[in-house]
Amino acid sequence: MRVSRIQAEKNRQTVIDVASRLFREHGFDGIGLKDLMEGAGLTQGAFYKQFASKDDLVAQASRRALESAFSRWSAAAAANPQDPLGAVIAFYLSMEHRAERMDGCPIVALGADAARQGADVKASFEAGIREYLALLGSWIGDAGGGEPAGKAMAILSTMVGALVLSRAVNDEQLSKQFLQAAAESVQPGLSAGDNRERPLQ
Picture 1 (cartoon, rainbow, N blue to C red):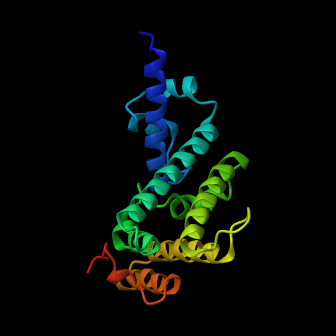
Picture 2 (picture 1 turned 45 degrees about the vertical axis):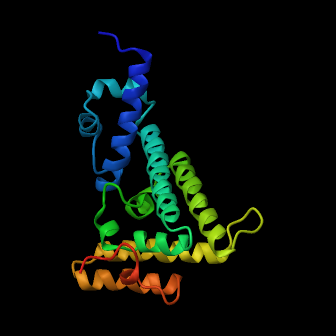
């Protein structure tokens, strides 16, 4: 039975959504097309009607993952307009976010993988990273000219690095300490434990 164009596009978007989560959990090379398509409720044969290659899907799923993450930053900021940076720090550097492998930050989950990918995947990550930097810059008065400013870059680097390290260790206390130290570093006087979303005790 032929699938309508509307249904085919819905299926395609479902595959991109599912892949954006499964790639974050398993890595780009940690899951095959068969399992990706099964996760979307479709057959592997349908893949080639929707995407030019797995690389094509990787680039689109990366873009979707970064869009989703940016939306979460925006939602956290909107919930606390008096201190949007503090709200994002509280959300991002929390033990809850650390545990969200499928829905967490794609830069943390896939940054190392992206560095080994082609230009299209790197372009998706670069666009997402630039959006993060622009948002940070608008909050800290660091937005000037067309290039990201140093303070926003330092904050993003610290937050991403802390989350990577917190996920890389077994010791839960050490993991919390990485997140708290980063929170105090990027916004002096503000620790991850003092914010709206508290790390697990």
